Image 1 (tube, rainbow, N blue to C red):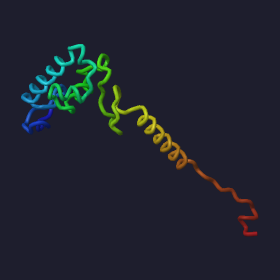
Image 2 (image 1 turned 180 degrees about the vertical axis):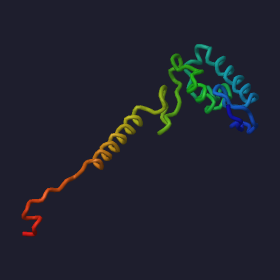
Image 3 (image 1 turned 90 degrees about the vertical axis):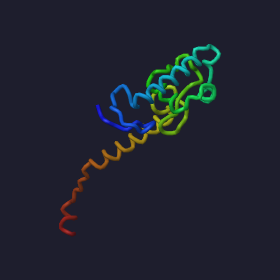
Image 4 (image 1 turned 120 degrees about the vertical axis):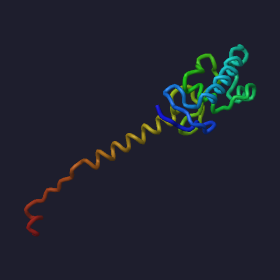
Length: 135
């Protein structure tokens, strides 16, 4: 456990694996989480987009993304909800990157591996007796 400043308010607190904000900010997050849960409990609100939830509840989008990524909000019954790809910002529902960015990154890794293999290859030059003696 480390002594850190709260990323929200700047107060000192003891960071634990379960909390990344100070106790007062954590309580505020919990209150906002309950607001979102109450909003999404209504069947008609389950089709809401991120923008609609932010507008209706007043909970910031960054906090909604945190709830989704931490697994507190499950996307199984929320078809219009997602979070941005870490690379391009496109909305995704699982992982850290969209399939396009993941595929592109995989291709780049393959190219780097091939370049490393080429560097490791030993090139040997063989000379005939004529070339060595200068004839």
